[in-house]
Image (cartoon, rainbow, N blue to C red; front, side, top):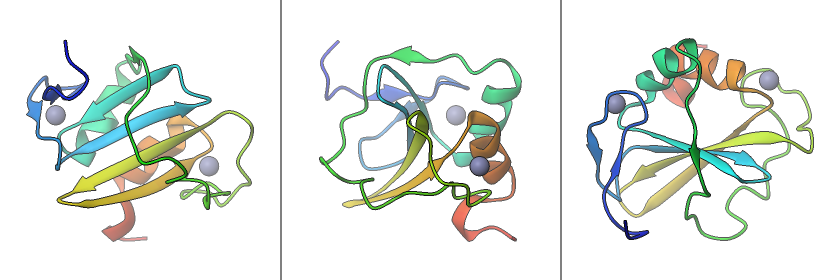
Length: 115
Ligand SMILES: [Zn+2]
Ligand SMILES: [Zn+2]
């Protein structure tokens, strides 16, 4: 499959357009996942977090400014997660210390949800 082909949600299998959805990457990167909706990260994690091999294709340095977990504020370890929202031309990254905190954050609505 070509790199630029339409991706599918790691949870429900729905196709995700390149300028929509969410991409999750473990850093340093060898595992990735994608979600059509942020909420789908929650059941995905509960069911055992099935990763795909590979790296997401994002602009270099996109998440360089992130140094703490969006959920708990802890300083990021060498191994952490980056979740990127695709919204039209925009790429909006958030970082997490663990899959648990990414799912907690997703559950509460992400950036725009209630605190
Ligand atoms: Zn989905
Ligand atoms: Zn955290």
